[in-house]
Length: 289
Length: 254
Image 1 (spheres, rainbow over the protein chains, first blue to last red):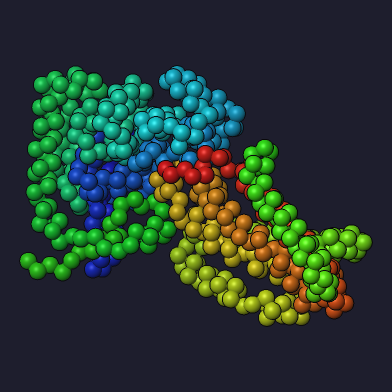
Image 2 (image 1 turned 135 degrees about the vertical axis):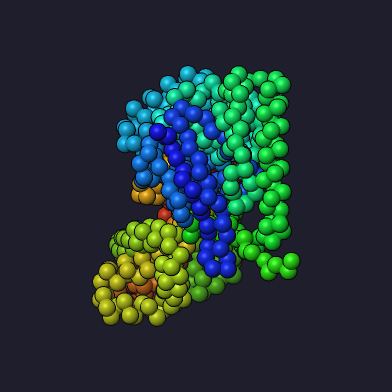
């Protein structure tokens, strides 16, 4: 029985002529302790899919099961959204302690747990810093430790390192392999192919919007969760995923040309606080051909 | 403290200099003190009338502070609901704007008729005028909250209330304070004006009595008390802000 199972989930935004489909019939399962990477072009609907796997958004049709049972996985999959979502007014230690505080554990006990985790990873000297005082790589590490300390059976990462420079990104990726507990399942959404191979046991490739599965690649033994980026196996796996991505791109090119963005950025934010995807701003144009 | 001294001394010197010039001009020109009294005369008159001045100040300060606190208490849930629901925003904001568009001179008599000449009508007038800037600023702060932070907390099983208090609310605190600061600047002035329209005591009545008795020196004294009181209130708001919001947040970009 899978830990998380998405069955033919579809997600559309808006209605009538302005309706836009973000996710098109995706079935996907994640086993306990398994690391699944999801790659796809920017804006393809990856984040929407991830929200549904976390129980933060409900599919328009289809369903998401947790341990085989229907019902929201909300509260069981710790999400690490793009940018890290650190709370700027809390120090590092209070950011890492957030999950324990939400669970109702006392401030003192939560901070003690956070501090021991920070110490384990050599970050204790930053315990009383505010996020704005940290480097990008350090912020990513802190956000990840917060997600780990939540102690949930699964974590969901949405482009966790997109804002980092190439060298820092590689460092943090390698650090993450060490930091992630073996028994924790992980869903990683990314557009970085190397990252998906490096951190995943299995890579699911999505098409351009609306997202559907183009193919799936199992990362070979010895490459998965290893740090070697130059082995022939690694390079071959990356190549296979790149080919699949190209296929997915070509198939939806015709749709892409009919999509264009309009609207103001302001109007969307307040009303739908849980939606990062800007589909509401995309309208289908009057196609002439 | 030395920092405040370093930043504050030019203003202090300018103020003292202005008073000195004022004093000199009045003394040398021999202008009628009913038109323009010298600062020294104002200070002396204020001191000899201190019992009455202090009692009026107390009344106005009490009414102003009660109205201010009531205004903040009403504005907080208002901001949260307005930020949470677009429909509510569209329903409530025009009403709030109307409440601001009605001038004090018109709303004052109404409140006097409804709530009498006692303190209650003043407290309510101050509260009505204080609500709007706070709601506008706080609601904007709540709406500008980072959705990623809410998603993070929600995925960990946080309740809507927890997210409102610890994520969106805490994030909106600087905006809330900017609204509170705007309101604070008008609190004592509104209270005194409301008293002027009809009251049993307070600086508004004190001003009215001073004016009808041609006591220009006491008009200046009451004006000075209102000014100093307002500066004191703004300072208190600043202190509260510094206590509640870590310094690294101010000027933080990401």
